Image 1 (cartoon, rainbow, N blue to C red):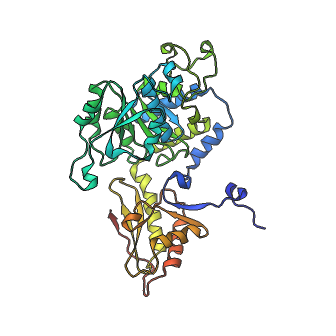
Image 2: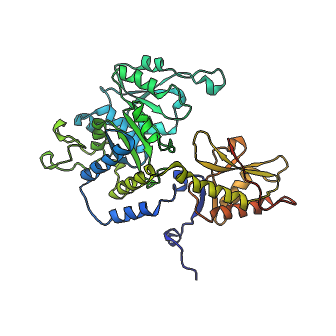
Image 3: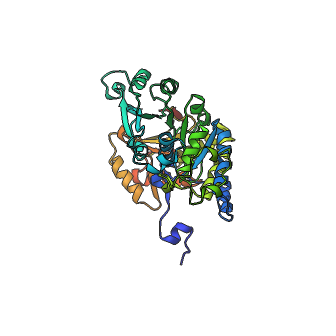
Length: 418
């Protein structure tokens, strides 16, 4: 009898080949050994959590240029905690009331074209979104989108913050949004969950004036899947931390590091806050810190080179498929992050949907990236692949597509920008 190869097989759960990228749906990526080792070591000791958060805040501040930082249980938790911080400041009475925001500043201004599923995390704090701008450039009705003056005009006496979703094509530019918000004394929270790489984006949004920025910890940074970063103003980070920490202790017996939470500025300790369900463990904090230091110290070439090697190995393994073409492509929105793009021609006797099902049902199960499916393409991301897996994917593609007659098994590999 064959022994189970890993903890998942011992549980009766199959593992997959993740060609989708570090998506939560397919369990994120593969942590570096040093990150996993740091988490294992962390699990063998006990610490004061406020002190651990304070030390992690120092590392985050150094990497991002922010005043302080907080490790969260993913980017969505960072959005919830960041919004809560903007609603309450350091007022424990307001913290105790959330998500009841009656009588409080409880409106969040955001650009209509930046609405997405993840802004549910913002709304969870008890706010009402105020949308501005008409995204004509996306609807095809024109070329305009929201402008900074529209954000300024939408800010009123009930505005608690401006929410900005960072994308390479996001409009208005963040500095203009910050200027409009700060003119009215309103903070700006930036969702930059998937804006890494490039590594320069770790510091970019704070440098452009954002008060709070959220990053995913389990994507390009390579930390635990259930981790994220909230960085920004020291007072807002303290407010966010207060709404997620275990504070079941008398005020006079709690001594957090003053550099992280200045206890003298509090009227008292809040009860367990709206972020208590987002508590992060010591293992995730240490894992995120280890991954962040590793990511920040790595050159772009060192990070992307293995990904190109894996992409080219896949194309070599899938040489000459019938009625299909594979290319190594680089999305200009994510420089240095390649993928293998597969397109079928009009004579193919299989659809992309059917091919997807066959890959899904195979052994091992292969999960491509579906981000270009509407454009008639499958993407195979190398970000979470392990050596040897591109060859398995190539073999399975040829098994389902067949090899064209006379195909050369070692094609010339080109790279193109999509």
